Length: 173
Image 1 (spheres, rainbow, N blue to C red):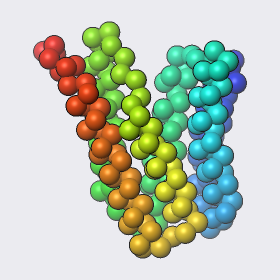
Image 2: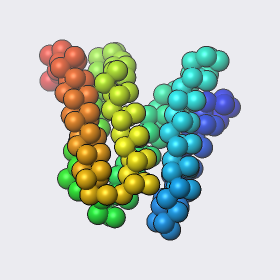
Image 3: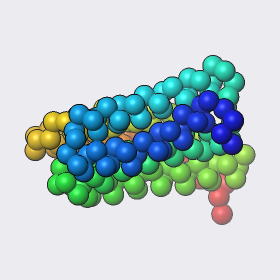
Image 4: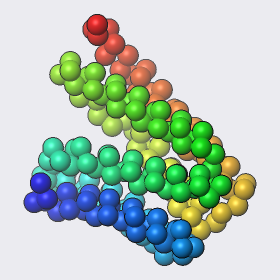
């Protein structure tokens, strides 16, 4: 399971989530941002290492995107609790994640794999960046702009997954 460097980096990202939360809750914004940046950069690092050194595993295929979602959703829940983001925004992000995961499950039953779309990668990058900004520069205007950037990229990428893969629904009972 953890025999590859890429998988170890993915697990490290998951371990960094409670570290980030502890630092954020204690008001150590710069330290929290540092940990958050390391966690976000580990996403690029594990993907690069997995592809470049032929370390692609089933564990990595499952855990890498899950680790991203865990990091982002933990941060969003923190910001909801701190009053920096409305709860309904997190609900929309969760809805998109569950819907795309459901779409992928239906596709798997049809022996199809739905690869990550470019818009999904943009959504992840935008979300990670703006959540980092919200960590160190909390302000009502920035919080609102960041929330809307997350929602726009989330909605666009979710719609794109369904439009590009609508044929998945032709053969379901």
